[in-house]
Length: 481
Image (cartoon, rainbow, N blue to C red; front, side, top):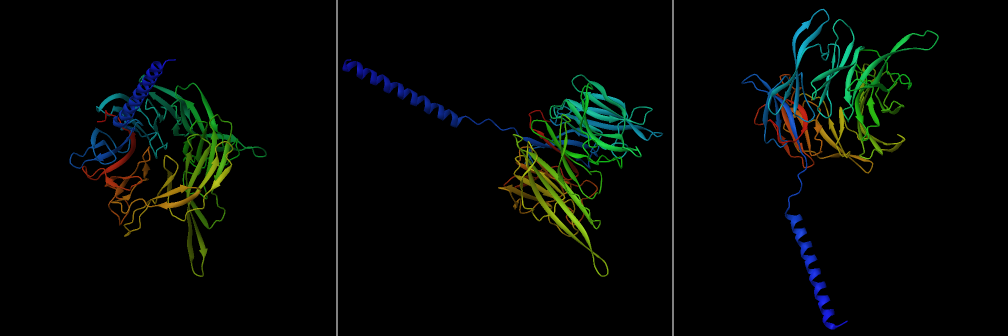
């Protein structure tokens, strides 16, 4: 091969390398100057009552307090915002069936961005809270259907209906059955989850009937029903003592194959248990039992569940307070044990794989952050004359619990359970400035956010004033009102 050819090949090789290097530099520069894809955010929805025009409206704002927009008028008590924030179901009582003590009303479904009433349902006999039901309306996760409970005319039972927004039709999926409570929807919006009573016959000798609560599902089109938690068959005595459903706080596994739930939710009890059930109805398993037998003791327990994204770990946080009355020469002296704890289970066998040393701290609620690393703690009362805030955060890391420095000072005490934003960047609560007393009954609250973890505090409703009630978080889209 001649020297000339060799040199030519080398020159060509160097040129190709230079071109490749130049192209690589161009790609790097483009990556640096091209803005990153914005992450989906979340906005706050809340009710605002204006004293000037005496109207209550749905408002939506950024968590930093900017871009506050007022939407349609609505009732604070019988209005339900869909998960995507686009629809608002408003129930108004038109008259009463005094013989059956049942309200007869109208359900309007408003498209929030425009305030237009798109769906209108007349003569509904919905089961309002504290009348004959506990929860009477629930949106599906995809915001395309409403499940609601009603009292059928001339009957004493309860109907379950599903209203489809796409077709504008209502389907009676459960007709004229006993007292029940809408608990949730399945994550795929295919099934309505109900707490339902069931009467069973005891074995010999007396063969008397006894009532139990079960968890059942009904397909949204009414074509199928199944029981996913048969408490009597599983041998758990969740009995029907009152018409307050004692099963609550349901949480789904990432794959939808399991749910966790608590019992004894209807009132004061000597303990509270946490269960997990396979959603195919194949079995119920007891995870934790905080029951006490000492008659001098009373206990308050709250659980919160966090599933790992893969479903291989199940973290259970609990807040408990045990109050004991000790006999003294002339009177009973109450003492209490307060603690926050974490128990970690294997997601397949539900055996305990880790248990954190309890944290000596009083909280009446506990809530996991979306990443399962932090716990949001809250005391639901104030001591008169004590202006301390009741919100705290604990960190769970390497099997240990420790208090986290949240914020130096909060402008108001929480009047309702604080909530994490779905991305874990904010904590929000409805707060009262009346730090020396209980939260006022005139709804004189502000909506306060705390950016996490830096602890920056913002009064989202500073431009509106007080008289606000928190609805919750909705995805951020461009067509907000």
